[in-house]
Image (cartoon, rainbow, N blue to C red; front, side):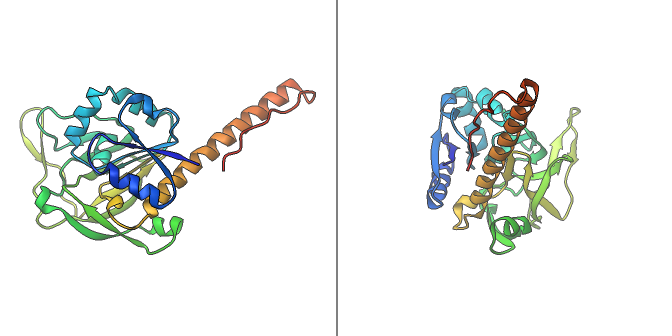
Length: 255
């Protein structure tokens, strides 16, 4: 059975743990680098991203988290977790914050405004219905939420949503101290996937819809299948070089 880690520094890690239990999956709370060992995948929950970054620095987690992402194991960031995984973040507090990186996108830390501008809406996600069944829509819970301003060519957009009319104007400060408008579109990206990385600006763990967690677990199965295929090819190559006299090596079976 897959073992899913949940970064448990701050934020909605308890809700992710509960969501995993509901679908019969073992979740493990992660607070130290050594606790990442032996995990099949990792969820980075929503919360206060600056606080989470400070705690991650205190526990020297960033090098281990980057290594985990770089190893190709599935990682899912929700809300603040999305910010952590982005290669670039704007709209940060003075001094910024450290990022894990790996996801080729630019994210705005507080795109939808302050806490009182949090909201819920129905999101169209045909991919989720295709992969996990059910409706073509899901409930998106946005709490002081970020959003993705742009993505690289290898990033698959899974969902977007209309930009609220009361959204604050989004600006960044250039090196010369001049403010520049960076986003004026009618819709904004709120869910993406790039290889082993899944990211959502909203909180699926706060709803009864388990399809996002199931989809993430399917990513873990995909990674095992790829690893098995690579191991099989490597073994076949060695067997061909060694000749037919050698007995093939027994390979692990991933279910």
